[in-house]
Image 1 (cartoon, one colour):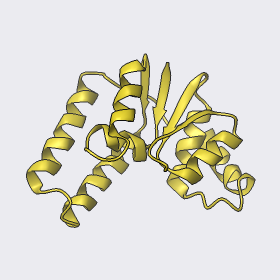
Image 2 (cartoon, helix red, strand yellow; image 1 turned 180 degrees about the vertical axis):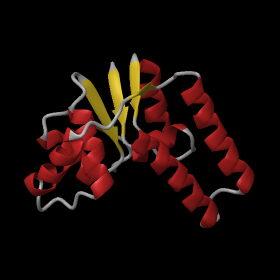
Image 3 (cartoon, rainbow, N blue to C red; image 1 turned 135 degrees about the vertical axis):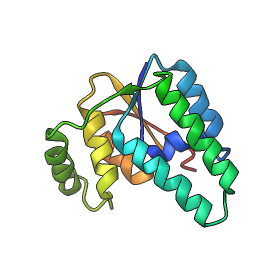
Image 4 (cartoon, rainbow, N blue to C red; image 1 turned 120 degrees about the horizontal axis):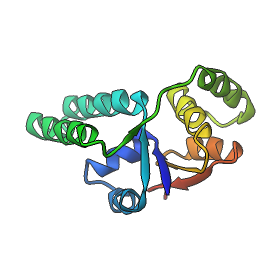
Length: 145
């Protein structure tokens, strides 16, 4: 199974929260788990935000980030570059899914995943899941209840 995780879902692999067990299950079944530079930047930003908000202490934040970097170094993920066409697809997607309130980076993740044949898109964001479904992606929602 080829998987592309939006960062909202990927973060659940590194933190203990609603949906973490489901994400771990998908990761264990994935033959290829794609990772974009968007994932890397968003995960770093999310950890810093949770530290600032007091949800993580400095040691927890660093441990999670270090584990992610180890997984990247161990080639657990398959890097996927952002093709120039993703920008055009994301722009069109925002109009296509209106009135769904699709955010910029969420649109870019969907656009990137849409260029990966046979991929299952995993997200913890309702609007993003709806957009991905409208593009015809096989989509899984995690912890959307």
